[in-house]
Image (spheres, rainbow, N blue to C red):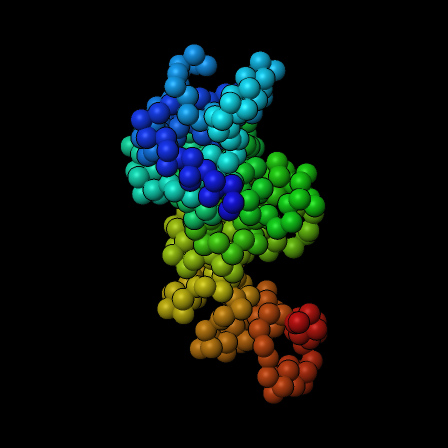
Length: 323
């Protein structure tokens, strides 16, 4: 905060003056630098001789000559700040609507990637920019650029990334963020990522095998996105939709009319199953569906005693697995 306050004072004095950028400025594209210059009423200096220079910004990988030059000018009273400080300032004073409007009209892929790398922008703005990224129909780990963007998602949203940094560029990292993240705007953006499979060691058919199935086991996935996955026509995903706790009761009552056992089993596993469907699944003639219900739903003592009296071994085993 102190760095930004100091920079605010410097920026206030830049009207009509020039700023010299040294080194590389990866996370601020030329378009973003131009937006910043317009915002503060300054110009970008062409080189060290383009006087008068009122501010020097040190990017990454500056050479020895640039380092010596900036030290000399700083001693002479010219403010010198790092690009990281400028990024924080830019992110604090940026107009999200203007930026998103610019990105929508002129979809500069490199600029979008650079902005996604700027840790100073808010999570909400990050998600809005991520929605504008074109994956070009390829999964996150099929191209270097897509892998780079997937890495920014994991770096920002995976809990305790500092202790498990190796996961940042692993397919598992994006998969785990999809399953665990509570940010609804991020989940909306991740729906736009082309689906991909990961190796699943578990033999449980209800364990997610793809990125989108991983999103579908996230209890924070907005209900509006469930219909999106249903409309894909993918039977496995439709089963996960049926199992999702945010599936409205009215939709549950529609899906129970399906002839697909997989859909019924998904509903039977739904933790917010409509009460009026309990008796239907409890008395189902399909053993797989009935056992899924007995494994997953709260059961009354009377129900358990009735099943005990019937001496139905498979049903008793299913009750034994009910947490």
